Amino acid sequence: MRRSLSLLACALLALPVSQAAGAEGETDSATPAKTPSTNALETRVTRLIEALGADTLKSRTDAERELLDIGPTALDHIPSPETLPTASIREGVRRIRIELERRKAIESLEPSIVTLRGRHPLSEVLAQIRRQTGNRFDVKASTEELAAPIDVDFNRTPFWKALDDVAAKAGLRYATETSELALEKRPSKATRADEEVVDYPGAFRLATTKGMLRPLIGADDKRLLRGAVRIAAEPRLRPLFLHYAARNIHIRSSEGHEYAPFTSAAKYELPLAEGSWLELTFDVVVPADTLPDTVHVEGTIGAYTAAGTEEFVFSDLLAKGVSRRKAGVTVRLQQVKFEPQEDGTRTAQVEMSVVYDVGGPAFESHRTWIYFNGTWLSGKGGVRIAKDPGLNATHQMDGGIVVEYGFSGLKDDPSTYRFHYAAPTLLIDQPLHFSLRHVPVERLKPAVMDK
Image (tube, rainbow, N blue to C red; front, side, top):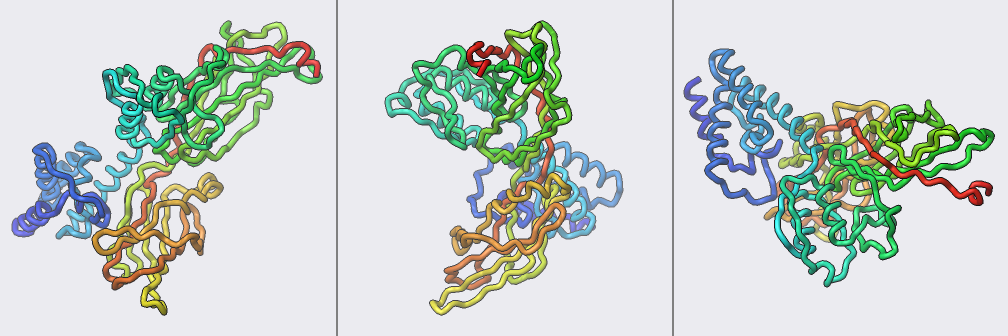
C-alpha cells in the first residue's frame, strides 16, 4: 500500500492543472500559471486523494469529507478516476467529482457580480461588466456616447443592478424589438410613466411599468386589471422554460385588497431562450368600488434551467462505447466511422448519446435545446474543426437522445483527432420569488372603454 500511495503522489503532482480539470483530463486551452495559493491547494488535494486509499475507514471517510469541504475549487486538481491506481481511490474520486460538479452547477445559477469604482468611459464600464460576468449584450450608441465618462461604485454588485445603474446614468434603456439583450438610447420624450418597477430574483430580472384597468364584459360592478411583466435571465445562463400557476401570482392594492385571478386554475409553460426577453401577463378581477391607484405584484415563478455547462473530451475515437459522467449527465461515445473520400480527405460520422438523470414530461416537451450543445473536433495543435450543418437524431429516450454528427474535410490520421461535447450537467427547476411594489395602475378613459 505504501508503495502504491507514493506512486500515486508522483502521478498526481506530474499532472498539469488543465489535465485535472476535465472528465477526460484534456483541454485545448493553455495551462494557467500557478500561484502559491493554487500550489498549496494542489498539494492539499493530492494528499487527500492519497488518503482515500488509506487502510482505515475513518481515514478514508475523513479525507472524502475534507475534499468535499474544499468545494468546487478542488475540481481543477482532481484527476479523472480512470488514471488512479486503486479501486477504493477511483470510487472515492468518482463520488467526490459528481458531488462537487453538482455544487458547481448550482452555484452557476447565482447572480454574477461586478466590482468597479471611479469615473470611466461608458465603453470601458460596459467592457468590464462583460468581462467580469461573462454576459454578452449589445449597446446601440455613438462613438461619442461610448466615450463619455460616468461614475460607478460597484462592490460585488449583481449584474442586473449594475447594468440598470449604468443604463440610468448613460440615458439608455433595454431595446424591445430585439430578441437578445441590448441597450439603446432612451428617447427624449420618455416620461415618468415609462419608468419600470424592477425586482431581481436570483440571476433574473423582472420588470413592469403599469397595470391597465379595463371593462369586464357582463359585469358592470367589476373591472379587469391587466398587467405585463418582462423577465430575462443573465445571458450566460441557459433557461429552458418558465412555468407558473395563476394562483401563485398575488395582486394586492396598496390598501391591502387582494384581487382574484380572472382564471384561477390557469397554468402556463413558456419557452425562454438564453439572452432573450419573455413577457408574462396577469389578469385579475377588481371590484368597481375599490379601484386602486397602485398595486403590489408578488409571487413565484419556476425557471427550469440547464446549468453548469462542462466540456466532455474523448481522445480515442476508434474505441466504442466510452462514457464520461459529470454531475447529473452521462455522455457516451457510441462509435465514430471514418470514411475516405476521393479528394484524399476523410469524413467522420460521430454517434453519441447524452442522458440526464432528470427526465419526465417537462424535459420531453422542451428537449430541442439539447440539439444545440457545443460539438466539435480538435486536430493537431488543438485546431478546432466545426461539425457539418444539421444532425441526425436516431433515438429519443426519457431524459436523453442518441444523435449523429458529421465532420468533413479531415486531412490527418483518425488517431490525431479528439471529439468535444459541451453540455449542461444539471437540469434544475429554480423557484423565483419576486415582489414588484407600487406598480402604477392606469384607468382607460371612458371614450376608450366604450369602444
